[in-house]
Picture 1 (cartoon, one colour):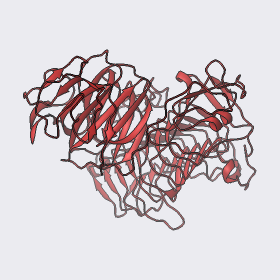
Picture 2 (tube, rainbow, N blue to C red; picture 1 turned 90 degrees about the horizontal axis):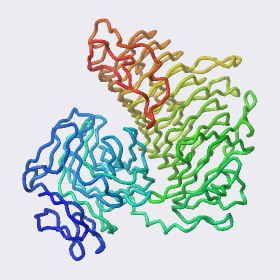
Picture 3 (cartoon, rainbow, N blue to C red; picture 1 turned 90 degrees about the vertical axis):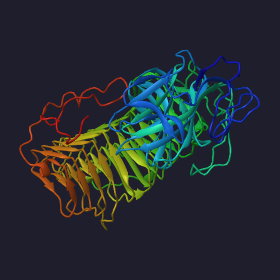
Picture 4 (tube, rainbow, N blue to C red; picture 1 turned 45 degrees about the horizontal axis):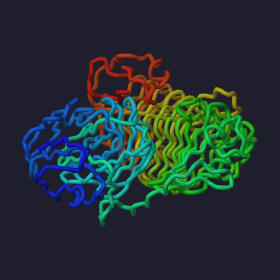
Length: 608
């Protein structure tokens, strides 16, 4: 039964299965207690047998019986099915619901949303098959604010909660915090969502003014982080800011300044030194050209991550040309700490919306976990653009553009657009990347022994000697999925991605004997083999290979529904790459097009 209530804390009697909703004196549903100051804005347990009060967008929604009555979304093939409720004027509030995934699909998820200002702009908490993510979504582009490995099996109920207060949003599953981050929304409705998934939703409540206190739970693999301390006014350099504060930096600033928007610091070095967990470092427009790299060696937490970002989308360039090893000499080495214009050996950092050029690597991230690299450009560096190495897990690489990276010291054999290599760690994900015109490979997973997931990404033009490097030895693959001196197995996953016009291979196992999964990918006009999995135990499903030197080398891999299985001549709807390689959308997405889709509309290959 739906109830839209005033903010007095009064709520009608209604039958909850897992507990009674209480304001002031009762206990909240699930594993969370709401403080006495909370007031209930909205509640719906669907016991009235309908979903009146919810507006629908996509999917097949109905109220059915799932132990008790619940709202169900039963269309597994819908890209984004949504229902919304509440008021567009709601600002600071929390939404909580019980959610039961029924089926996930290959890339599916299900969850809840707050502060929805449009059908594609909101903050949301979503369950994937192997993890939970807190996301900020703007015009359809999702930035991951926090991620925790967590498997909620189909048929299992979980209690999801999102709290939005001021500029911050926090997500919890079964009472355990999974992430906190900045929200650029200020008001809006609540929502329930699925993406290529089916699910049931029940016991939805919206409250304001109360903070949940977790009770013991086994749903989260890590302990619940403590609350960040209350922010204090912007401090002087001798008094680092309290967690949650902001520090501003400008090319015309001064490190003797307090770091306010009116009196910014002058260097990112100083801002990193002063920052405490929860601090957001806001970079003002311009070019920063330090003589030494920036070293990040202290950890945030899931609840209080550090953030480095361009202020309100201003154009920020970190230029490493003045740093050592730009370039290193032929056969020269770069000491570990001097690798990267940004050198990171830390957890829980977010680097957002900046451009890094001409560095000894753009970002070198070693023994680093739970970091988010979002809407970055890493170009024209003297080694790889973004490089993640050693014991590194749960890193998110989102909407990366990485191009023109080369390594004169190794004749082009080492500089990739993106490298996650020589290490291990679960939960690393790449989404929405474009990797092009790098001297070695677009993506390289050499000797990384844990599965990496790659989705919705494109690699082209890699391995061509555009710098007249003597004795150029770049490998020239779009997606190099492993390999190593011992050829140990790693089960990487690539979905809905494209490789075209690379000098050699499109998608290659590089002698990785692991259980690769390649699903709905496209290889076009690569000089060598489009899909080379001759050494892997791979599963290839509905991939498309056209006009490569060789379309596929299968070995003993499994092949179902791919273009070479179906046979015939494959005509492409569009071979003009100008849209997919052009400017990204306002939200940071790769612009959609019909590029390389089958002209006959067959469900084969990538759709980006």
